[in-house]
Image (cartoon, rainbow, N blue to C red; front, side, top):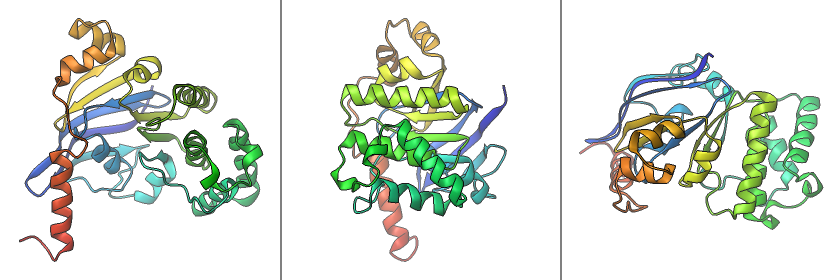
Length: 268
């Protein structure tokens, strides 16, 4: 099967700090791929490079055959994204959030309206289409974000910890939606999560990244077998260690400091 994502020798440096350190991997078209790692491992930085939000320091990225640094508009048409942090406009209705997204992506009006209805029914929000998003629960907002990310028929959807803070019932429903979409439309799913049972249950292949490098990859069964562990969580801990990683990691601190330094008038 053809690769829809190809990454070779990818590097991202912030000043003297290397956040992503010569990683290489590929994702096949229609695959459900988990990108796992502790806090500060380089997951979100990698996703930002794949989705044109950050420019790589070195290396090669191809998404559906296009380079994000050379052809960002074509790449953006190829993917949808659900960020770790909420990105909906709470003061708009669910319909208005979807409509605005469709207009931004240039989806023709008749197709846009039909697609909005199809997706909102799919995630069971059609009866709340005229409700303000600020009235929604966390799970309802996540479902709407997923529907919005799929509106322009992307070939890949990126999900950066999409179930963070959701109850088990909502998480289970959300993955059921995504797996059905994967089967129905052949969409490639690239996701990060700290819930190992999610990756174990839904990912067809997994890469584990730590300190900016990929340290293991394969199916869940292969990772468990290679570490001699019965669960993916135990295999993950065997590979990455049991030391607690702070949410505000040193990697994040250095990136923020570097960004402030440049905003303040250039490198000193």
